[in-house]
Image 1 (cartoon, rainbow, N blue to C red):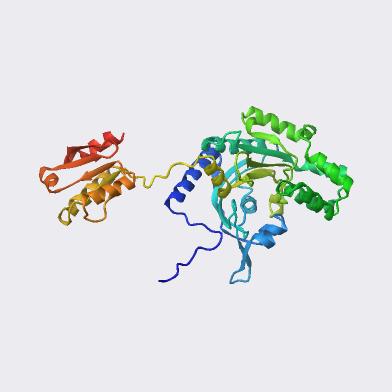
Image 2 (image 1 turned 90 degrees about the vertical axis):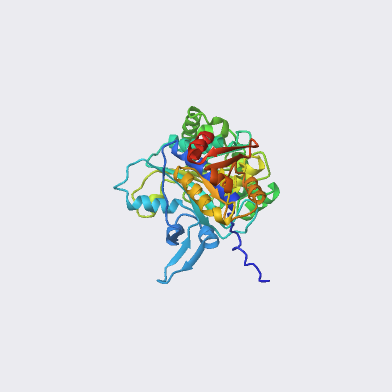
Length: 423
């Protein structure tokens, strides 16, 4: 017996049940996006590595990207994120588009990471962005979109929390604590890792990076200050807008949220599960006002966020919010009584489909109990039987598996009958 060739490590096979869930997820994020007037778009799955090199961070480019040289000698990557592609697309047609631009997308991405709970190498991601508006209210709108999605899928405030911070506020605090400009990326990385490390080990890591004990004490005091945001005009306006949008029960301030990517300039936010064992963020984003000019466009304010499908799937599963899998969208099975009556069954199935109904035709003549068992396993409701007696009497036997009743319907009235039943 030949060995089955396994899937590539870190990828997933989407069997019908998982595909059904992915479609359900897509439908809800589409609804959340479009309820705020956002338009769907898509970018190439392949990009040049230069697009990410300047602003996405060294780790993403050198360690996490799938990079190869194409036949022209150019370095190409499977896209690890979408924001740089979005910035490039906007820059290319900056004089043609109507601003502010509200765009969203849902598609596949790849990062070479160690597969583990909540993380895979291939994943699907919701991206949603608002470009052309430089205000905290624009950031608040994106947070409200995220909350709208949470409400649609049943994630209540006691189970999900969106934590907000402002990078400019943190830069001011770093100035006050005496951190040099060259130390800022190191400090931001330390802050970003704080929640994932034991306190003592985090302290040790900070000291190893050159933070002195006085600075460390001051930094921890800043990170633990829940009222720090009150000194920021940007965050004060943002929280006012969040309250007006009716989503304040999901949102709070946390100075530990800085986001790892280098292109964020001001507001940053992440959403976390607060009820289960999933420790990774559900989504994250913020304001990136300089990225467009970095890819050759005119400077333009922008804000947005991304949500991968892996973590949110785990959170929904742990909270019992994954919808039941329906094996088929059809509700009607047309049976095949015998080889001689196959044409009659084919004709009936075709007529019902032409009338707009979703119909499964059993693929071959078989015992009726086998066909009924199939209908039951596929959660079909109606089974239509065309035996020799039915064909001779110009009728169809209709069995309602849900009600447990069966009746004969005239062949020329079957479409009308099923329409009324399906209504």
